[in-house]
Image (cartoon, rainbow, N blue to C red; front, side, top):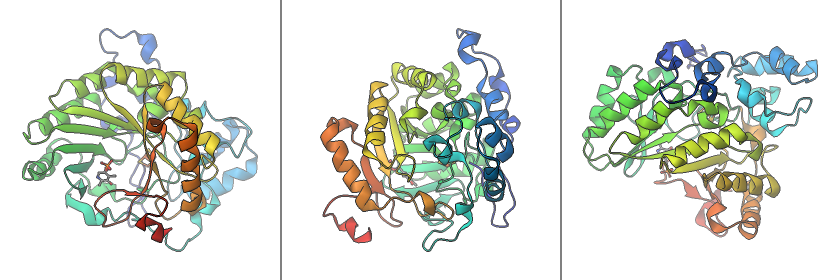
Length: 369
Ligand SMILES: *Cc1c(COP(=O)(O)O)cnc(C)c1O
Ligand code: SF4
């Protein structure tokens, strides 16, 4: 994800060329056709300007100027494989809405802040956040493969996170000093913008900490650029004593096309549990048919729905908000339409709480509807 410093200077996205060129060759045993074009090239050739996006998607020219204004605060970034799933000529397309900057982002909304989930208070070491028992989350990078307009970390000060393996030594020491931890979550940004070599070495160093048992990766890359699921990535996740878990992020069933389904299959066939988290977003997935189709598409391709997140009140995203009463009735609808395992847990993050909070009928958390 691309982030803006307190001084509003654009410090990201990192140029993809800064994250290592080692993956440019095809790994042995994989046919070039499986990887063409290479994910790094796809990342580099992503669309970054509103005029090109509007032209490619046959949108009216009056979308360009507002998109440029809003992109000044959080840049536009859409790679080709994701663009290919957007319906041309439809400004309301649910995939387009996730990536097209709008004037609405510039409007102030009461209660919508730069750090809605109190990440800054959860920092236990540079690049390490801990909010919940047993698991620590590493902000491995600020770079993302797509810029989601509703992103809760769109204002995160990524430049304060370590970059380069040696810069991670203090963070790893902090993990080693806390025997209550048994899981490390690689997050960001998107950790899969880092090279397979870097990830393998980071995982190796984490595995050297005896009390850590699981490594979890939070990533949107298998959705956005499915070619990112390489044999080397799978080797990095399986070639460790740590139990791996991959959590992807898709919000709409049309984000999962044939190539994405194949990337899921590669992960699951390798024995890696695959979960999905989605965000409930107005105009994207705030209807029962879409949410049911999302869950069905996920489980048909062996990814389990994990969380449906209530939108975090991040500055610039208020136009995506769906009231919790609406979300609750959507979940009730899913419960009667789907097997129990296909109904995601509907949660919100409340700063200071010891877990993501379930949003339930007659639960105390309803007090904060
Ligand atoms: C959301 C989050 C987690 C993961 O929570 P789970 O309920 O285990 O998925 C871990 N650490 C931080 C800081 C988080 O924000
Ligand atoms: S939601 Fe995830 S993939 Fe999207 S910009 Fe934020 S961190 Fe990146």
